[in-house]
Amino acid sequence: MSYNENLLKSWLDEDEDYLEDYSEEEEMLEEESAVLYIRNCIQTNRRINYCKKLLTQHKDALIYYTLAILYRTYDFDPDGNLLYKKYVRYYCIMAIRKDRRYASAWALLSETYYWIALVAGEVASTRPLSSISDDYSESLFSKNRKEEIKYIEKALCCVKKALQIEPQNEEYLNILKFYYQKRNEIYCFKSGV
Image 1: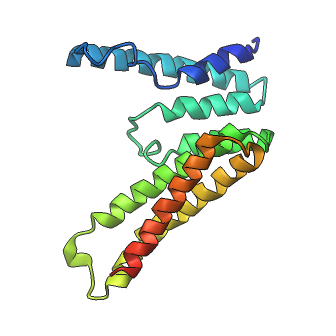
Image 2 (image 1 turned 90 degrees about the horizontal axis):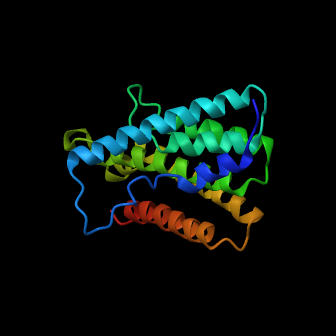
């Protein structure tokens, strides 16, 4: 099987843009949207299978990173693996193991850890009131809140790695600032109670 790097790079550029062909003035029927979504899922599955076949012959950082991007586009999963971005994390880590200076993989891994922090934070913020003790500081730093902070710290660490590789990257710098802001909001929320 031949390995066409440009093909994979073109897929990275497409990412999740399958709905961008419609202008805001055009109304897309729900059925049309569903058909486009299904087509995108089929195409994504084909691309994932293609990349996995490539991995049998080529253990390359670009292939691993492409798989991470492709798995990021999924938003359904019966086992919950995608909610916690298990495959995205795995393929990002594999890309980084192949190339420690792969800034995009570090940035995607940071995005993934931040997503997990959001999931953990949602769990922490939706606890029933009856489960909250009289000690508010204990409830604010419950196990789920600690998980949220842990994953924000991991996200910060990964985006810092990306910035060490590409220090002039404005997007990474903005992500770093955003993560610091979110982490500080959690700490301020705790101390403000």
